[in-house]
Image 1: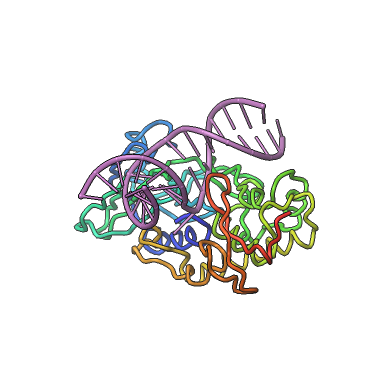
Image 2: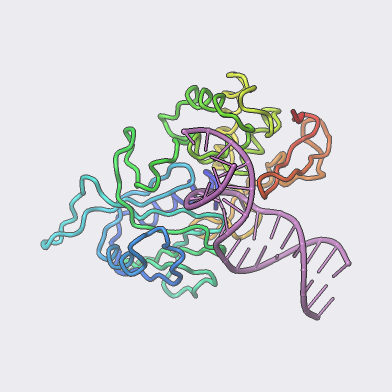
Length: 296
DNA sequence: CTTATGACCTGCAAGC
DNA sequence: TGCTTGCAGGTCATAA
């Protein structure tokens, strides 16, 4: 469920259906799904059992559920100072599903989390296994509480402390194409291939335009459009072309109907009517209007 | 330090 | 019908 809006849809679902519950048992069905948890699958499962979930958070495309401190002998859950979190990244095909225990296992079910109540279980399903879960320490980074593995990820445009001016300054200091910069999660997070192409189309910029030649105004416009398009997508439940990208209830979003450039090869540009072209980009594809977005 | 490239996976659709 | 190729919304380690 990859880019920011889709991950945010999942975060909201987790907050609604998982927060405040106590984990009873964790089952790792595919070790690769917890490869980022260095001590291994057995440690991952053992240390999560008995922990209480607090709140679901997100930065860029990473999401995590903060955990209360371990229960004391009297059964109290104490908020830990530093704390730990159940960290998730969906990669290219990961799903977090809230399912009744009796629902049949999904073909690509990788991790199952059961709870002490009678409620539904949490399932991590991931066809391509680029995503994964980990139990990670939470630390303070630049005023934000983040899992260690997220410390290097820049603030995303939905973050109240996102500093667009600073991002544009950093962008202009780069020596690469503007699309590459937009996809660099250490510069600005949450933007992926779809919303990069959509933001570039709205700004009338070709992705290969050198960052050094981008004016401050163009940079701010680009970030503004990236923010707008992701907000609009979120309001429609995210973008999905197929059943691979769904919310915790397995439902797809509708933003694919609103795409102007991404995946629209051969379709007329909604602005000028020129057919949208597809070009190879970093083992993937870029979509743009050859008339509105002149190649440098 | 920055930047570019391939590796990591499975499954689907299109072309022969 | 089968086979091959290309493609998919991401990130990371490594090399230059």
